[in-house]
Length: 296
Image 1 (cartoon, helix red, strand yellow):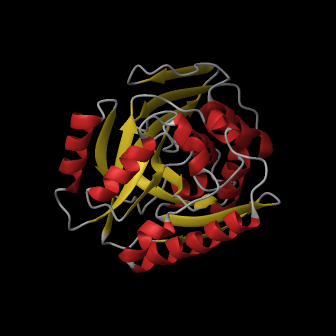
Image 2 (cartoon, rainbow, N blue to C red; image 1 turned 45 degrees about the vertical axis):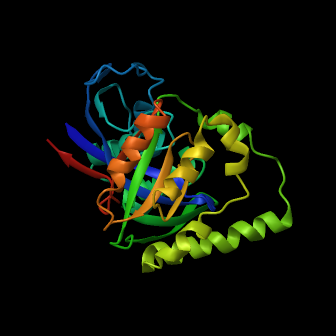
């Protein structure tokens, strides 16, 4: 049996639509082994597909198929802390777990780059799957089945507060809200800020983070799907956040905060309790390790 541990991720980060992501210290832990049938269970009682529709199983089978092996069945035990359909990379975590677990069981026929490429190809974009595999802060693009990426540590002065609602938002619905075309000046607006965000997160130029998370490509069209989303971003900044943005497709909101502000998490939790009872706040640091797999 193998155990795969995969971190949560936050993609887009405001200006970096479909290209920038970060790994966070919240994990899905998946145990897998071959058997003669499909046997899937969840330690936390969550409702998950327990047949061939299960994403972890599908991704594991994809590895077996591509490497020329037959998969008769698979036993999967899920222990998932990443909330589903909240914009924190739960589907990417399952994709990565299936690929890396199967690859380990087969003796690692796929190297790290092949794993990264396959995960992004399955996902359709690399901004969740790449940091899930590598950890840290990643800039990535998928072209012709290959992911070009840069992975760097996040500056040690930055922490993250995640505002998570009790309602879901599917990626499909969030993507459907986006326009089919954008204005040239909107593209330039985001290009400049995405570059500024990458440089600021890695060098610690904290005063840039608010403007660097500005966005014209996706957030304005998704706020209508996220009750209180704009309010929480504004109030997160008023509490002292360096910048705030929709995490992935939403609905979760992430605030970047100065690590020395030790009371920020308590203030964020108090804000939710007082004004936004359908939301809760938790502090998460950047995961710098990425997904791990071992035999047990």
